[in-house]
Amino acid sequence: MLLALTAGFALSQAFRTVAAILAPPLQQEFGLTPRQLGVFAGAFHVAFGSLQLFMGMGIDVWGPRRTVLAVSPLAIVGALLAATAHGFPQLLLAQVVIGVGCAPAFLVCTVFIARRFPAPRFAAVSGSVLGIGSVGLLLTGTPLAWVVEQLSWRAGFVALAFGSAAAWLAILLLVREAPPQPDEGARPGLLQALRGYGELFALPHTWGILLLATFTYASFLALRGLWLGPLLVERHGFSLVQTGHVALAVSVVGMAGPPLFGRLDPGDARRRGWLVSYTFVVAALYAAMAFSRSAALDVALSVVSSLVSGYMVLQYADVRAAYPARMTGRAMAVFTMALFLGVGLMQWTTGLVASAAPGLHVETYAAVLGSIALLLVFAAVGFRLLPGPGRQP
Image 1 (tube, one colour):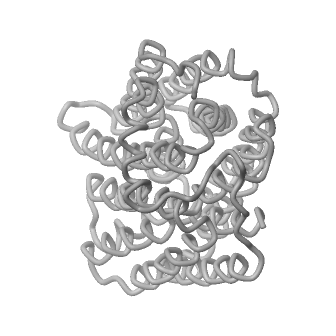
Image 2: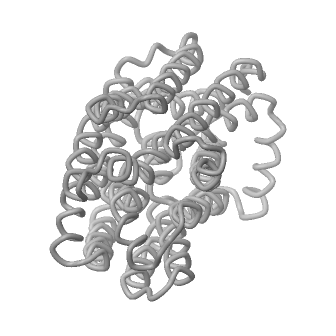
């Protein structure tokens, strides 16, 4: 059942990273500016993140299976809408519809793990799911680049629509809802679930968790999901297929990161220190890329940052440990909302930075990567200074 849910998550991973490969052909066909590219890539994540509170309510009230089966067909509709787009507004609309359709994809996996697996295994199992789900990133590397070069970018969206339909069918046939657990109590009604969010936001440690979540995953997606392709094509003259090879390498290495860090999870006492330290490490890698002018170094740093970014799986374990079982669905929903609204915010912000850089006589990708590094430092410092979780009731 978890593998079937992970298939849906893998397709959402593919959708959220198509911009890295599709940016050059979309720029060529529609004349998109860097700012428009940022808006295009960010639209998925804004829609995805904005719906997380409602997805969490749906999961708490109706369960993961019913929620994902009801919502995910919109990803198929959005992909077909993108494949037939004839202008930037239709592309944006398609991204929003896809984002809504993918909104429950990983949240249902985390809630399923929290309800079906013992707490000490949460980080390891979540890391494995993130690793397996990264197959979706592989699809938007060399395979998607090849489809785009041989056919068109529209064919790429059609292929993803078929994949989404297959994932939906697997969930329909294989996944069953879990019976209520003794420590969860009765499933809440809609109003009760909505009031539960107020309780969650009243806890002081929620704000540090959300601050870090806003910028960590966003840093990885800003590179892998948007700027990697333009960086390699414009800074170093790579072809689209060569860029696809690098994206594939980044994705393959990145698949190892979450399972690795999931198994290395140091436990509740030390986990938050690890989160701060590794956020600084990733910031340093982006800063080094900002000043690099070597193609080999940029590729190497991209691959290394992808592996180290696997530490972000520890954030899920941190959330799991910070709240009681009755709040798991809503806590994961708010956390996931911050992750993906952060992606939309960072992609929009870096689009603005990229547009402003030439006027400031700064190399475009130095400005983009440097701004990502600064935002990561800000997040790590804020997470360290804001209150941590106390004992839960």
